[in-house]
Structures are given as C-alpha cells and as structure tokens.
Length: 421
Ligand code: XMP
Image 1 (cartoon, protein in one colour):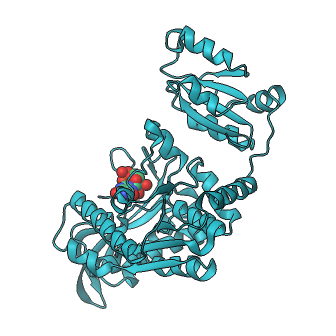
Image 2 (image 1 turned 180 degrees about the vertical axis):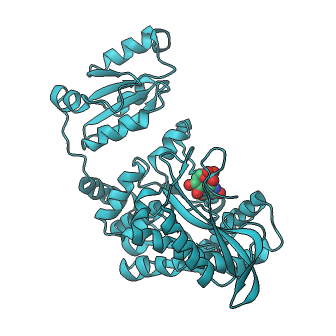
Image 3 (image 1 turned 60 degrees about the vertical axis):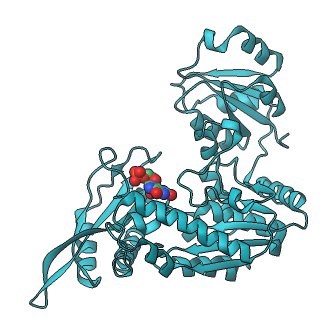
C-alpha cells in the first residue's frame, strides 16, 4: 500500500488519461492509472481514497456493466466521472481536496526520502548493477541508488562510439568525480565501428549497435562478479503505454532490453517506475544533477548512429559530432533550445562541390533539424529565424572540416520522422 492518499484513475480508452494523472499529481496527490478492465481486487489493493473514471471509447453503461458498477460502489469512495473533453478538469482540486479531503503531501522531497528508505531496506547488503546511458532516467536512478546503498551500486557506461561530443567525458566527470558513484566507463568505440564496417541499412545498424551493446555490457558485468539486482529506468509512461500487461513494462527502444534475463539477477529494481518524465526531472533537480544532464533532450539508444547516414566511420562521426556541438551551443546561447523538443545535426551521406580559398572542395552536406512535439508521435519543424540559420549554417560550413554545405530540415512528422534513419 502506498504511504500517501491515493487516487485511482480508471481509463476507459481515453486519449488523455495521462493528462488527468499529471493534473492530479500537480496537486501533490499520488495517483495511478489502471485500465478499465482492472479487477476490483487490483483497485482495492491500492486502497484508493477517490476514483476518477476517465471516459473514452470503451465507456458506456454496457461496458461499465452492472457488476463492475456495483463493485466500484462497494469500494465506498467518491467517484468523479470525467468526460474526455473536460481535460484537464478545472474542478479537480475542489473534488479531491475539498470534497474527498485528500492530503497534498506527495512531494518530490517525500518521494526521494521514501524511495531511498525503501531501496535501503530492500537491498540490504546486496549488490546492484545499473546500465548508465547518460540520459535522464538512468542518471536519476543512479543517484537515488547511490544515496541508498553507496558503493554497493556499480554503474556501467558503454561508449559505443556514437555519442555526442564530450558526452562520455561528461558522464564520468559528473557521476564518478562529483557524485562519487562507482562507475565503470567502457570505451568500446573501436569494437562497435569494426562490427559496423560496411553496414548501410538503418535497421541493420540499429540491430548491430543493440546486440553489441548487450555483449559488451554482459562482459563487463561478468568481470564485476555476482550482482544481485539490476536497475531499470522504466518510467510511468512506459508502464501505461505498454498496456499494463502483467505490469511488465519494457522500455521502448531500450538498449538493455533482454539483458536481465541473460545475466540472471535475483531481482529488477525500477526506482522511477511510477513517475512521469517531468517528475523524474524534478527529482533529478532536487538530487542536484546538473541541468546539462537532467534537462537534456531525448537521445536515441543508437545515438548518432541514426543521424550519420550510410556507413558509420570514425571520420564521418567526428565531423557530425563537431557540427552537432556547434548547433547545440548556438541554440542554447540564443535561447531557442526552449522552443524545441529535440534538435540536432545530421550528416547526410551526400557530398557536394564547394569552394574555399579559391580552391574547389568536395565536402559533406549537414542538415540541421529542430522539432517541437509533445508525444513524439507527431512533430512540427521549429520555424527558427532565418538570420540565426544563416549565421549558424555559415559557421558550420566554414569551420567544421569536411563540411561545405548546410541545409535546414523543414518537414514535420508525418510525413517525415524525427530522426533521419
Ligand atoms: P522518429 O524518428 O521515429 O523518433 O520520429 C521518435 C522518437 O524516438 C526516438 N528514436 C529512437 N530512440 N532508439 C531510441 O532509443 C531508436 O532506434 C530510435 N529511433 C528514434 C527519436 O529520437 C525520437 O525522440
């Protein structure tokens, strides 16, 4: 049972059940979203103080059913029935606090305290392994676990050679040097690039990076000796979007999928399983994780591997890293980073003729991309000011060796995807 007053949101196929859940949590009240098919025992286990029925395509007298309705009534808690159009609902606070008398004590600080205490109790003197990607979720998990069990935690960070400029160094500096986390950093660039030589098909590239990642990680884990627990940075959207099946969420696109089964741990720990992304970030801020990590944009598991078109070579990846770093810096300096959900450079595999110092050049074409999205299923290109684009594009074409032309990607999703491969 959760230590805080809990609201259960029953989702009848609404498109916005997550928005209601986020609105409840904004009030510092804990809630969980369950599918409308959840049995009454599952609801009762959470000991809810209030129920919200989130109407959607599966809602109706018939689907709710007499028995279910009677069951819900037997819980004896107040029920709010929300239409899909009432979102986010204005009267939520009035209902939950005014009418149901729920306490608003589910805060970031309490979450951290309680999670650290729980982890400490569950882990005891056992050992924990965490795959650190440098992303927000695994970073927050690492710091929470480090607070709970200190040196019993080992983090492994694998540099697959497709990281952004300075990223591997930054991960080590922040987590090993500043936080004092026991972090093993593996430079596997050469190994990945050897396996990727000659491979041009995007899905084949993804597959090789994923498989090689597991192999490298497995080898490192074996060197460390027996570990009891494996940490996964699953978040609540992964849980909800995976359809709750057996409560087993798989982090979509995740590099470490399949790893726990292969290495064989006693248990999986998911410290942020019940948090939404913005809540994970709040925890990260409170834990003192620098904004450069905690507020960074999403970065795909295969990294620059899907932004460097065609065969992956060190030469091309280095060119892309330079161009990308330049663009990221310029976006942050101009403050446009806040207008974009994801922004990056792409090394198109096209080379074109240019001119420098009166001589003909033959360089790569770099594409810049910046998109705004809420769910990453659809996205719009950010209309960056042309003056800014002219300046940044010019700088990249002039200063990044190997590049002589820069274009801006103006397409939305659909019909394009966010990544180029
Ligand atoms: P697309 O390109 O499909 O991207 O519009 C949607 C979101 O997913 C990310 N993405 C990936 N993430 N492994 C990942 O971990 C991948 O292979 C992958 N492909 C795309 C992309 O960055 C965007 O946020």
